[in-house]
Amino acid sequence: MALKLGLYYCYLLGVSKVWVETNSQLVCHWFNGMGKISWSLQQVWDDIVDLADLIDSKVSHVNREANSVANSLAKL
Image 1 (tube, rainbow, N blue to C red):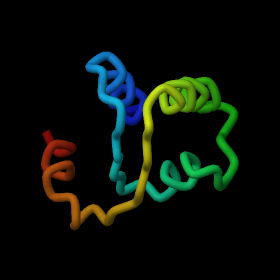
Image 2 (image 1 turned 90 degrees about the vertical axis):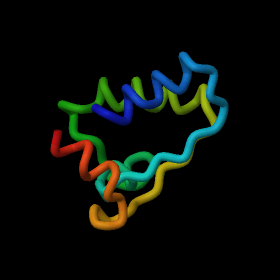
Image 3 (image 1 turned 60 degrees about the vertical axis):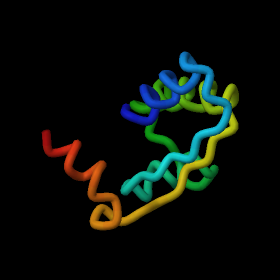
Image 4 (image 1 turned 135 degrees about the horizontal axis):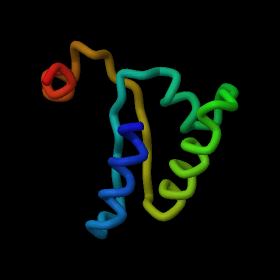
């Protein structure tokens, strides 16, 4: 998952605060404690939570159209 990798790089680089904007409402809800995680993603999600505990992190939802840079990168 991109969120796991992004948080991992932030940790390696010594970033102490990060605000992640995602176009996935599901990921945003999971990160903010809403919704149930699929059993098939639970291990990856546990890793994300562990990384997020090491960094002051926040996740919010943005529409795909509002995040043109990320949308362009996703198309590469």
